[in-house]
Length: 95
Image 1 (cartoon, rainbow, N blue to C red):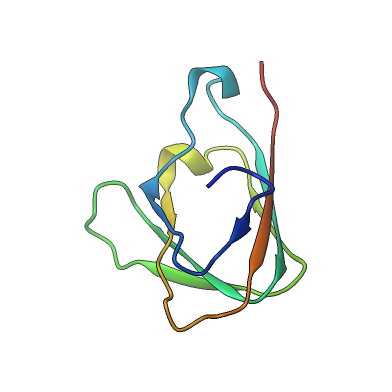
Image 2: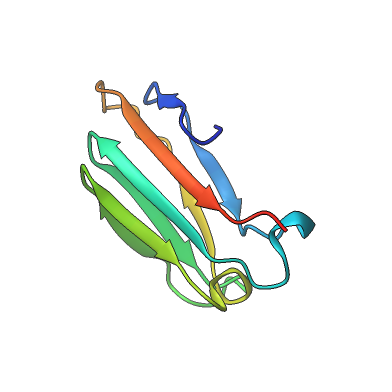
């Protein structure tokens, strides 16, 4: 799902980190969640630690700062019981 698209509640984003070359070696990313609350899950890339779940409520701003993309991977899991739309605006600095 691209930045600014609405979420039809069947959409999800698989485990990843934002490591695209255009973002530079240590990107800072801001993600603004609007409308219905959705879950965001975090875990270490090695898979050894327990995952962390965050509930991103309406108007939540998730800041992924320096070192984040090297230390964490994240996903937006499917939540099929949600029937209301959500909008995510993601801000990245392209180098």
